[in-house]
Image (cartoon, rainbow, N blue to C red; front, side, top):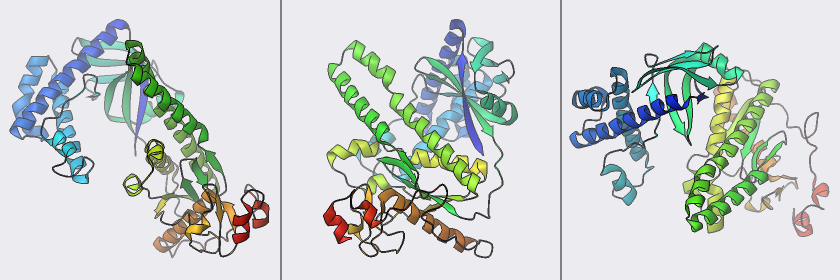
Length: 417
């Protein structure tokens, strides 16, 4: 499987100037090649080379490999645009957004990433140095910093292209590594159900809750600060906005990495698979009040799901995606489905059997049961019988009975359940 390892470069001022000149020249050339591809309707790699290769080399002083990568980057951009149009990500044909994307050529930001191959880039892992091609000639002994794990992955598994990226005045190298996958555990004895949410980022069927309230508070604070700075519209407010623009995303990504690592480690330790909800298209399906839209739009469930999936592949843990329909309204004990079962955001009270539980934990148990059913159907001859549902036991939270919850939920709801 492919894993991207990002290391931070520590160039001297002279080296940084050469890298900046290279990125600017390559992106100017890519924008020009894009206009040629658009005007002549030639958007395939080898066909576009006939029209743009010589001009790109001569006009911007690029080497042969750099010129080919510029043209390939341009064609890849049109391939991505075509896929987004086909998937409907840019609206319906004829809409304003659709026309804006199709009626003019693709352009590249001056600081867009530039791909490198092994002919243009070489790494000395132990010395933590790289040698890289630039428009000013070959620049050697560019220092970089990385963790011990990253250095090991670069030494053992680096393959293919690496991208040179400039972000907020800092230089990074994103290297592609081909990491071998662990053998898939086809004898999973059970599944760890994961219910994804906004208030609680993830809740497992074991009863463990990864709270998201602190992250949501930070998001609200950052959103309020952004609005104030945008209203001021002064040079200092713009500098501060630029400085803070990725802070929230970095925090959310760090939290998602930690949650994914913990979930996969727990599933691997106990010999279980992981059950996730298939939430594709949920933004289009759900209707929200205006105050809820920003919070829902900030929900990074897709990122967390992707992190869990690739970490599980590396560990050999099977991942099963299930239909999330009615998992929040279904009783995990008796299977009764009723909208009234969902008492509040936090509580679930079954109108049939009287079960009272944390709503997200009840949902995660339903996800676990659906995943086991799908797994059993797919491997009926080898899959063991599903274990009995247990409420107590070592490492599990004690079940919440109706009598326990009477003090936590309104008396009327407790009597009605």
